[in-house]
Amino acid sequence: MSRLFILSFIFLLSYGCVKDKTTIVELEEEPVVDEIYPACFEEEVQTHDVYISCGHALVYSYISDTSVVYFRLSSEHLELQRTCTSISLDQLDEFSRIKYLDWPSGQYPSFCDDVVADIPEMREWNISFGTITAAVSLTHLERETQSYLISILLEDAVFDRSEDGLEPIIIERLVVRDAQVGWYPG
Image 1 (cartoon, rainbow, N blue to C red):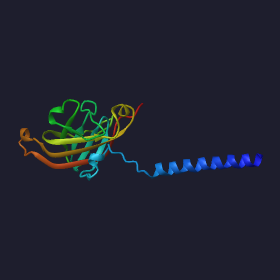
Image 2 (tube, rainbow, N blue to C red):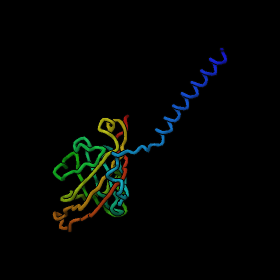
Image 3 (cartoon, rainbow, N blue to C red):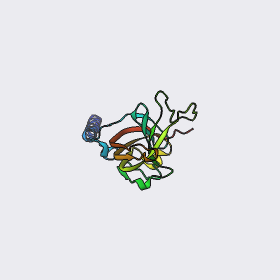
Image 4 (cartoon, rainbow, N blue to C red):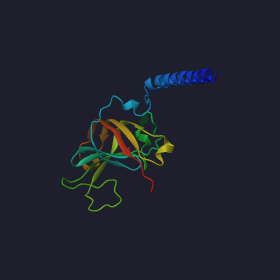
């Protein structure tokens, strides 16, 4: 009788375990896809390398050996999300800006550095026309304590240099994918 009880108990345990394993296998076969970040940039290919990125969405994207497009996109003021956010030029202010920077050949600025020495003289021009789209990899609360990724699309950008007697700079399309930004605690 005790053998029958033990065999029945083992059979029930085995049956229960097989059933649970089947359920686990079925769950593992379903693909997990992040439909949010960076879904809107999924088909985009990065067009320009990132010179450096840091802080609250500060991204310097190479244009040439002596110039960058500087993005300062305050995720808090612009309410950047994990989904694509369109940014109008009217939203750019003291906390958020896009500029074209250049400096003399052979001198390299030290962006994203607390200690700055021998800063080359830079010229800068604000964006005057264009469309901007951005997405970030973390929610606002998560961004407060850790670094995160930002992707940016700039289209039909015009940087007005008429005050310096120069032709405008036109950038048809600039794509930055997954630039690491944010502050580290401490």
